[in-house]
Length: 209
Image 1 (cartoon, rainbow, N blue to C red):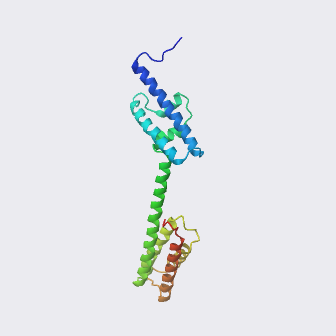
Image 2: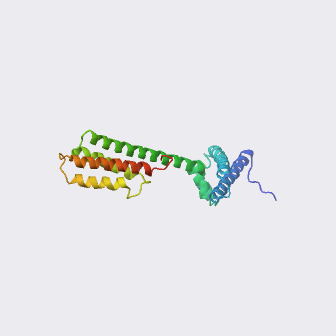
Image 3: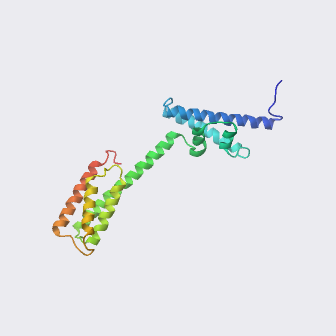
């Protein structure tokens, strides 16, 4: 005996939509696992994943009154699909797009940090050339330079510029604010800054990041 799940076209459409949503979630879960295991290439993955996301959004919009929570829908039908839920609901974009966005953000952050270091190096060296040698003039500049160098993860902890700036800051902290560097100290600091700047530029990847 045939058992009908619906009594009219409206109910039939609803069950069809449920079946379609179920299929999208299952397919997305399999696609995510295939991508993670290198069974499918990035380009093919991105195209198929974008199709599923677009299809899901259209269907979810249609069912939003009946299925307000996709997570609850998955629980109701005992679907263990955490990767699919993350991709469709939380992220909303293919993993490849996420990776490109993260890489671009990291590159932009690195570029900004490099530019800040360069500016601080030049400012400190120029200040010495202008005979700004009082402790309360030099100390803030070296503090900013030291802080900007610390932001760059590409520089090792024992990077020449870091250690030299720390030594100078330690030396300056023992002096009074109105004290001035002697001509010999000023020349030595300028030499250390220039040497550290050259080492800094040499330490940067060829890509400039």
